[in-house]
Image (cartoon, rainbow, N blue to C red; front, side, top):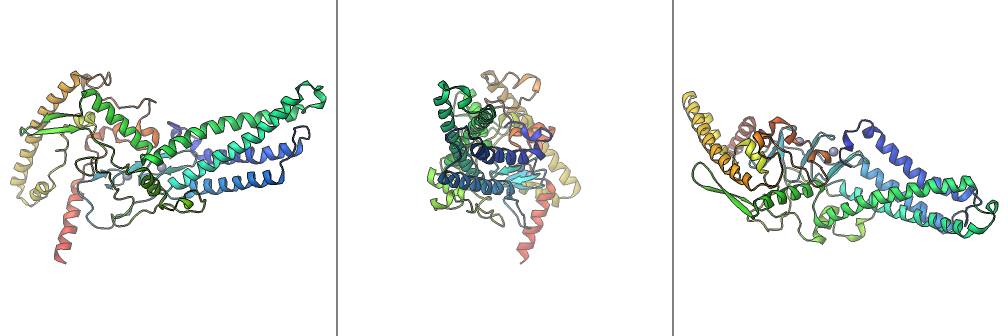
Length: 426
Ligand SMILES: [Zn+2]
Ligand SMILES: [Zn+2]
């Protein structure tokens, strides 16, 4: 599916194409069975007709909901929301955990899995249950059709020794072959998508997070250790450590969380709802339960040393001293200038030490040819050659502004101080 979102026409034609495919396989097949008198055993029985058309109705309902359900939109009321979190430069707003900025939906999407061109929608916290139900009914419908086509192949095979004019007619054979070929290829593709989706359901791990896990493991492996130390300018050592994926909280809890209910009977019910995005920075979509394997919460996603090298800021010391920056604003212009220069010098010293340490790491680096060459940045790709961009993420790594990404801008700090001041007066 990689890169499909960028193909022109796909965005506007994919949904009609899926509808045509459902109509061709679902109703075209029934017409062929009914009217080609030579394709044994003839039209579907009443119970087969009922079963198959019920499946098709479920398929239409779940597809409609997967396409039309809103992938979620964060609304920020004028309150201070977790100053240490990530920041989205495009939305100009904080970026809650597990959210990513989708470049097709043009906003930060809660628990974004990937942007699916076939539903023209993000698979996200809110759309996931509908997407999963659609895949389940699509696969069951395809297997049912496969069985019906197989029955007819069997009768064709039985008739192989009869004179040709007694067997199935040529148009019937062509129609059968076209339906079978399409059914086979579609069920192969949808079977693969269903299995990856069920996997991400059981492990509570989105496609994007799977990519992040692969990248983190590749980085951890190149050191051959679970961690390595970098000394910063103040002589403190900073630990790059192996971070456990924190959102896998046990398979039943994972499944219930994704479906928005622990009532198993509702999981495959086509009219069942989906998890709703919380409000005011609280509830699902804003905070996520963690499994406690890491020494602290909120450590996911782990940092990308290549990005740090580019930014020249160590991690976890990358967290800026917001208080100091705000204090500076109250100083006289000369004092503010001096304080700024002081911090700048400190940053530069820290950067030099960090660069030296990272160069050392590069010596044991068998991770990518381009990683340190002339400061050129290599973008990490997984074993399928995919980058985050391929899941629809607006990946700042592609821009030159990478270094400043996820920094909270000064204007936002001022706004927060204002809000805090207001609260203090009340
Ligand atoms: Zn955004
Ligand atoms: Zn999207």
